[in-house]
Image (cartoon, rainbow, N blue to C red; front, side, top):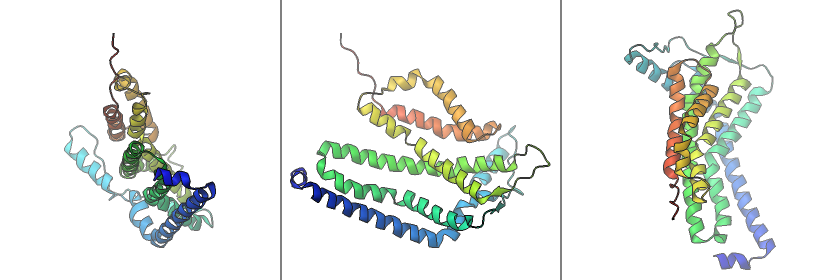
Length: 267
């Protein structure tokens, strides 16, 4: 395959790349159109689900706090976030942009695979194995991070901010644009944060990172991750702060396991 690729001219390479890009565009458009048609159901059943008191995390918190003595009871009764639209065209553009964003997220593995079919012939077998591991691990961790963002981080953030008042005279009226921006941002941030093990593995393979680094800076990491968790979920409740902190800290320890120890120096 590598010999065949070397025999191709520059214009042959360009034509092959154009074919791959066309396939990627077709996949993205088809998924986006399908999501556009299903978007009202997706909004009601998925995107706006954390606005209701019966969301799965709220019910879980209510069960856990009721079973743990000394922890304030988490109530799901009466919680509901009403969104408003303050710009004439916002709902239409949010419908379109959310369809495209979700299409990009859902079809990302297929898009990368199509791009891989163009690049793979130029790689050695050992390089292909490394890329395949990174591809699978990166996708799994990214989607896992987005799941944590959807089921944990965003609901906790929404619950706190929707009920927060600087003054009782200032009611909260949350706009649809603000809700979607926060929703997309937090899910994307958590997806990127969950790529930490992959980044650690890659740096470890090239010799830039060793397991001793994680042990040496564990105390610093705990403080930094607590600050990050507090930034993501600005709440004074230690229970919800712990719920957000634990997955991020588990990532830190998992990253340490993926990195090789520093080789001993021979005397």
